[in-house]
Length: 384
Image: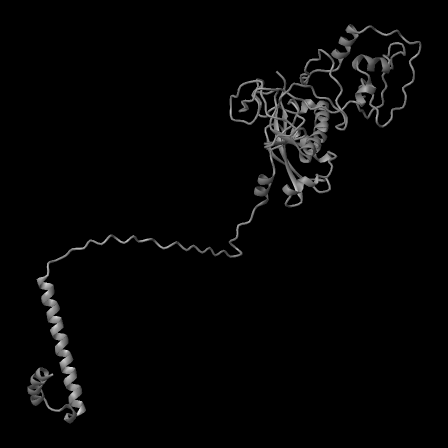
């Protein structure tokens, strides 16, 4: 204590009593003292920084993560994409293939590529030679694939076709200058002539569903027929002529079912499974229905083709038409025609006259406008 007093007494003598100093002078003195002290600290820091060695610190580069992109899609009612009926049809409909000439299966494949009237599994008796999902085979070069050879039979689509006679050859389209006279002469030479009857029976009245076979229509003429008629014994019997021109019984022909003409064509397929010819197809109501539609149209087409074959030229016609929910055929149009106009009109008539049933409920998925749109090809190719 005596030492501290010795030091502080001289200072207290120099300094005035703070209680006697006004407050504003005290505040001013405190501010000046604070500024002096801070200035000294700054000068001391600068001097220390100049004297200390330089230290370099390498900081790792900061990894900048780009902010996530914010995408906002705003669509108006006018710009919304709509699915067209054609796109809906292509997405819901599988190709339909006819099972004629292919091997049927008791079970449907898991991943069926086609729809058909029968279940089938992929198989081929020849190695794969192309990219088509079909079995490879040899045959004629035609634009449509067919897998067997069979003759056409005109009859009801609801009945099974009659079995073909053994050794029957494929018919060829008759030329325009041929008549029925050579056929009668050939039949007379090959078959024994029946015994002459004492008296030719009178011609019975034909019913609406019966056809007189072998009778030639009389040419129409405005003038009366004044030529002398032949004697009764020289006139051939109507029933005898019918027997000579048509060896098969008429009653069996009327009960025969319809059968489509098939010609085995060349196919370069991609199926490598060795076995009976077939494709991966599932039996569906739509496949059965479309085959019935094709049979209804085809039965009329072969009938009209056989009647006036000389009017039509070689070629094909592609038609498009729509079937309503009630089974009515609408909008029959020709898309392509490489034959003549008479052939195209005949094909249109066959589609219009066909007795088609309403589509199955399964077809509603591909009927966005209430109609089942279908394309059909008619090919008239003469045999070689």
